Length: 422
Image 1 (cartoon, helix red, strand yellow):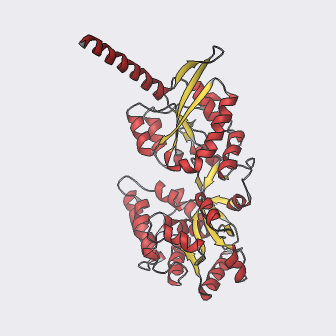
Image 2: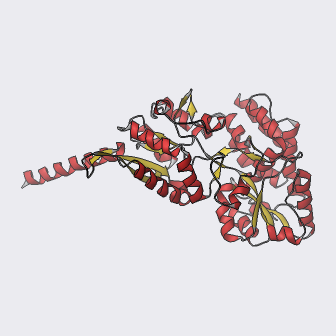
Image 3: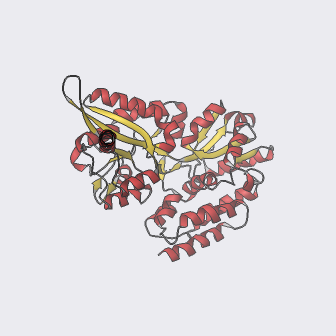
């Protein structure tokens, strides 16, 4: 009796081990016509499942129809912590999403030998801007499908309120200020501001700094300046001035994201600074929502650059099916797959051959140039010991919004940290 039980347990254990091995690194099976079918395990981004699911469902259907020898086992299991653990334990799936040069993570994965170089698999990168290719490149080798969409920050506005008070979308920064002045004089909060939330309160800063100080940000990013640049001082002081003039929500420090969004969609505030990723939130709540990037003093509309990782996927160096994994990544890098994603999700394209889903998305793409994102600059000059990102998030920005420091003082705080980081 004991031998039989032991034998059963041994069989179950072997079966389970074989199943786990197949799940971790893809598997082979025989198709109806006797051909071999490869199954690729793919991890999608768990945090954005609700946004991306329709797009990837269609993409995977089309890919498997065009590649009947490859089956996609697509799972929303990709969290940063999960991927980090899988890299360390050598248990990555065949393909998974990565964030490129947004963070140091991909470079660390490459250095640990976890990623498959894609240069020899024929990915066509001719459609992409230089920044997109750099996003997925480490030491001259491409490790991920380049980004084809962007995330950015801009102003959403209530068209009905603008029409009621004879206001138009501003063409220069001075006109933007005049719009805010008019709304304030009419008793309407110009800009709903979530001053309580660490991240959401940053969007106005990113928008304003790109509009007023993009060249200065680029100089810092290239190691050619610091935060004492007069343009940077002016940008931070503008945030303080807006707070002092009452352009933001009353008691701004106690307003969270949900409260700010509700004030905007209920018509209590005329504008809100938010990300392109929240476009559907406002479309579903406000029938007459409009969008614009804050223009600079010269009228140029600069979108703070943040390339989207929605379709940037890498392959494990240990996949048993590198050719098939690369074939899937090649498809994600194609215009065909990207157009499907744009149509299904309303993502904002950075490549001209991808058509936006609708007029609203066209407004999200109505910028003159992509600019340097303040957060990217802060990330690039930070170290493990001195994180300027955290200093800005948790100290500088809340103090600007609540009138506790000036623009000059804000730059002094960041410059002191910059000196320590060098």
